[in-house]
Image (cartoon, rainbow, N blue to C red; front, side):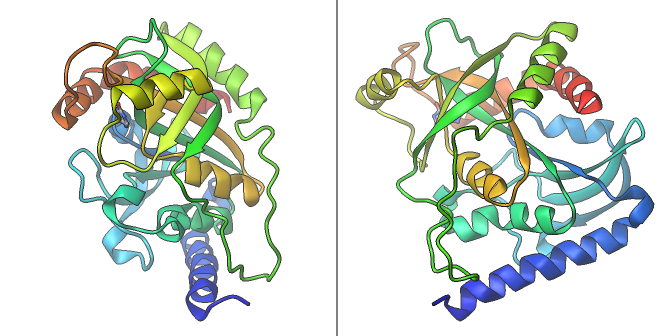
Length: 279
Ligand code: HPA
């Protein structure tokens, strides 16, 4: 049996999604959405805004308190292509539960989104990954210790979601093509999602490498799982902002992550603009 707060969150995502879709209007209703994480925020400079709403004015959405994350829901166009841009996200490590972390994805689905692009900053685990490279996700490992589909469920049925192909191969090929055309180094690899907020220990990074992870970060996995459960096609891209713990021998800092994120801004924009226009 679902608790009243789960049902309320579900109802709220439906009503908010419908409200936003109505405001966008049928002629401009985006089917494509992108969530901008650290390293990718500058894409919003390339968006012709029709309107934007701070998360603080949207019930159920939370602004991240972490530097480097804006908090705006943008209805815009990229060279004529309508899209939703979610500039900034809240994280599990900030104390939000996964229902709150994935609420914007439910709203996007209710607003008519069919294709979702998730972006994030990540630490590079695989040898040869350099800060400033990109990686498109071919798969993930959920190391968060929690699953966003955990019940109780509004429908009453457990969503045993198939995740054989979480990240759409067709979108992946378009990303590869966009990376080549924009001369941006974009690897393919497996993303290890962790809860944070501490960075990993060297032993954890060795373990994650053995498990098959190529990069590690603190977001994206719950959003991708919920998006798949709602039938969305998903693509995800990491900006490798640093070498993961012990890979470079230097201590990690959020300042380094932010600085690298700023320095890749132009390349991130080039990659995303080409990719999004090809979707
Ligand atoms: N670990 C986890 N999350 C991250 C990292 C990292 O090294 N870099 C950016 N986000």
